[in-house]
Image: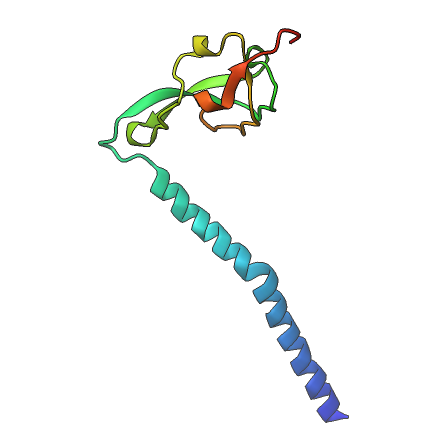
Length: 118
């Protein structure tokens, strides 16, 4: 009987360790990698920032830019996409050609003329 209790106790310990490894450990690694990515994305003191237009909210395909939140955001000049937009007047009469997630730059290739019925 004592051997059975010892065996079950050992199985419980193994189960708890396995549960930790499966559920908690990968999560802590994920958060650590996010911190590394975010700190790598921070501009350094010498980097020039330029204002570009970004989605201030999730924008769905077909949405008229007159009806959604667009904001100017400082962006590291060396990381600005070639077809980014900096002037909100470029979006007059335009709609989103694709979904644009919040805080993603508004690019010319993501913009189209609105259809007349909009």
